[in-house]
Length: 299
Image (cartoon, rainbow, N blue to C red):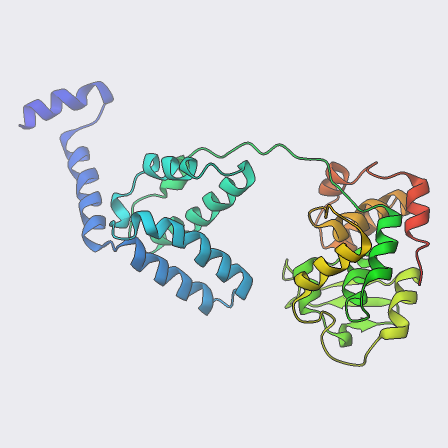
C-alpha cells in the first residue's frame, strides 16, 4: 500500500507521510466538528455577546435560516465550496443580494475555522457575483418640497434631517432630540448610533434649521413609530410613485457636492473615510441650478 501510495503522490512531489498528516488533520477536525444548526446558534450568541446591533443580528438570523434549511443537519467540516457555490446560485438573486448572502456565510465559516470546526473557509473558493453599479437616483427639488409639505409634523424631522443632513435611515431611527443642537448648528451622531461606530458632527445648514426650529423638542426620539408605513403614506399624498433607494441620503450627497464643491467636507458629514465613493456615485448627478433650488427649500 505504501509503495502504491508513493507512486500516486510522486507526480505531485508529495510523500505518504505528508498525505497521512493531511488526512489525519481532516479526521480530527471532523471528529470535533458540529452541525451547521449548532454552529449558527453559537455564532449568533457570540455576536450578541460582542454587542452587535439588533438590525445586524436580525440580518444574520434571516439569511442563515435559509442555509440551515438545506444544511442544518450536516457536519460543518464536510461542507464543500462547490456545495456552497451551488446553493448561492440556486437562489437566482441579484448580484448584490447574492454577495450579501455570501458575506454572511463567510462570517459563519470564518467563525467555524476559528473554533476549530473546519480546516478552511469554503466560501473563499466560491465565485463572487459582479455588481454593475446603477446610477444614483434622487428626488428632484420639487419632489422634495412636496414630500416635506405633505408630511405630518412628526415625520418632518425624519425627512428633513435625511434630506438636508444625510443621515442613514438606521441612524435617524436612533437619533434623539438631545443630539440636535440647533443653538450650535450641528447634529451629533454618537458612535453608538452611527453605522460605522465612530462619532461625527453633521452641520445644520440654514434651510434644515428653518424646518426643525418650529417643531423641535427638548427630548425624545426624532423618528415616530412605524416610520416606513408613515413614509409610504406621505409619498402617496405627495404624488411620488417611485421612491429611489436611500433617496434622502443620496439626494443630500448629490446636491451638497453640486452646491459646495467640497468632497472632503462632505465625506466627513456622511461618515465616509475617503472621498472615493463620493466621486464614484454623486459627482455631476444633479445640476448646479437644481442644487441652488434644493438648498433654498424652506417652510
